[in-house]
Length: 396
Image (cartoon, rainbow, N blue to C red):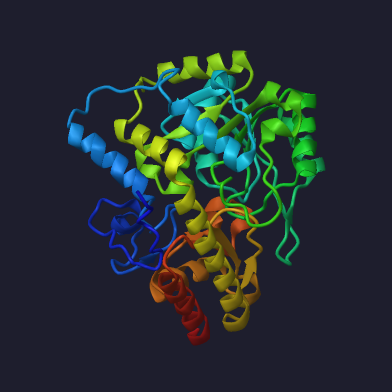
């Protein structure tokens, strides 16, 4: 059957569907008519092959316990995607299924560190990282990314190493490609990070959930940068960003070192979570087997949205800079040249523009004065959001 869901300009009403993005304005005291472009899911219908696969599950109409096992085809479909799109030969003995990447990070923290041990992240970064570390009673250590004020972020490697030494860091949570600043780390950068971690015996959890959306440069799987990196690497992937399947709770974690894998699994067992979601299994298999046409089409559309936003901001919105988006479908806007205080900026965005974006401050102190926008939406919605920002800044 041909792919049917390729109308990305079509607006799909998600309100009233228990949608986190649209239906929970009361959590943050947002206006009920706010336009949300915050959480990283898409406003597009996913591939029609997922739709068909889920309908077959519904027709069977038995929703008992389900699981995956060697030889049932699930892993082969996951591995096929990794090979086709990343030239990555994953082995089944590396694979662990989890209900999400954040769950996997929390599981790794409990499995490989003790209470009060130090865990390092690179802010500004996806804010659940810091929340998970603190909530698990670990010491949060931050290696701040360096922003040059002209739209480029780099790593302070000297600070990275010093923070590891000074705090006896046990685990480093890497974001690759980086959310929200959009960096696609070079092989040289990753090799340098990995070499430092190896030197001090630091385990690396590499969150690569956005790795199917690379616009500039080349994505390098952390564990594959050097063969010896496999000894201390956990690589997290998921179809959730790629195929808009976050609600299906499916992530594929790869842990090449056997001892690490079984320590991870033992901690997983303690959580009480057992069998994976029946709908998530079917959706993942369909997406990774038949979803290539949809994926290539949505990539093209999102890339054009990023280019549209860049051109619009440069021409129409004075004082705002779009940090170059090398990867992800999230754009990172620098408002510092407007001279607006961070708190005033948030009030302007929410109450005047009636936009629900992700405020930069939640990503760490280096995010103050920034806003993150999800551009995986119809072009008309993105245009509306940018016009609201322009209007508010002009009227201020």
